[in-house]
Image 1 (cartoon, one colour):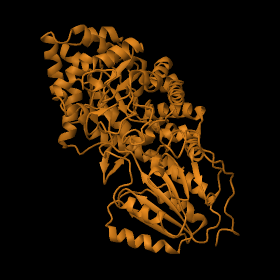
Image 2 (image 1 turned 45 degrees about the vertical axis):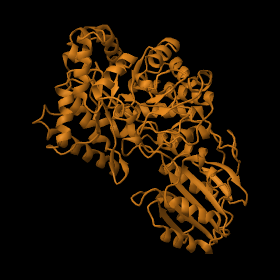
Image 3 (image 1 turned 45 degrees about the horizontal axis):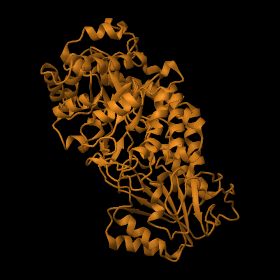
Length: 604
């Protein structure tokens, strides 16, 4: 009852926030009660009713957010201008960054905001989001699904299918109709700084099967239909560079690309994926010029359209990324993307400049009108498949039921439990043999992070006096040395290392003080069980630890699973979906039965 009351209050708050923007445009409706002539108009007549400038604008997908900014916010007014005056095709709900953390928007506020923006648009908007681990990546109060590699470790295709269904249901409940997932990259480079646990794994066929299952699940309920996107074509897994920072390169031969990188994309196309997202990386085997795949006619049209037979939407990765933005102006990047074969241009730094450049390219004969019309037709067809001409609005009354289905919360925790993978345990630290002398060390990337709180809380339920040491990357060496010195009384140390994938960081290694701290623990007197909550390749850097386990995810569900595995409350059954040469092969993983810590061996 209390939760329902809270939801009702949130609905009222969201509607009140929406109504404050009546001075910018009309009032928000909470349901789909408002319709327009355009919403029942088929795509082809609507295309004929658009000017060249309007058609070009449909290709632009701008950056947006899922919550209301202040009414006088310049960024917000610029955003409304893009939607209402430029008539762009849609926007992506990006995450706001605060204290180094991505902030999820409240669901009712997001839905009301999207409704509000749909009211500004002459043509229904495609509203996209990166939802690789369900709606929780952008929406608060939704199940905390682990990263995709955790699903790979759990080896449960049915669970991946359910993830797709959950993602579609959650997305549509808040007004999102275009999901930038699943990740179809084969992560076969341990030094990859930007894919890592976002991938289902290293085996091409296993990734293909997982991608297919996600698409099938996302499309299984017509009422929750979302456009699904396989990314990042032609494969971003085998590179050690972050395309957010630079033009990355994949040096594999064409035959290897066919046998590895392209396998999941072929499967996605066969399964009916709606869109494919391009990668800002050079692939010499497929494109001799040193240009991003996003701008390559050989790759987008020659390989993706002609060889693989893809007929859906080709969407670029964010054009604000340095893999493209560092090479060309916004307008030139837009023109080259369309020349290559792209239909949707994601997050350009200057949408108006892109529209102007594309119109000029058509008027001067560089791009044909037919080429523009082909892209617009694909985008409008996608809007039709998503039901946006029937209604573009979200019913706020249905959000709570869609976001808080118990079966999805249970699924998230079950997958986290099943994905916990133990590949080394020389001194039988799993499960914890005794609480006496046990210590917990949390290695956090920054001092603002809440990482480790769930893990510590779950362990302290059984071991109230468990010593806890928290180290973050920015600590000075003398403090790190002092903290490590305090662990000399420990008989066994469980070190939880949080290393998450983040755009622009450039690596997924333990940073700064964390590396120093682990070196001290690894060569200290007590055996160390290193639990990686994120990057699973850390064993390469610390091969002398007594035990090594991976959760492939930093979500709270994964922290809870790690605690339960340490305490012996769940069996350990995960299998490595990647290799760590020469230490670990794909499929490695120790099977350990559940053996809960009891009062007799808890040390309490």
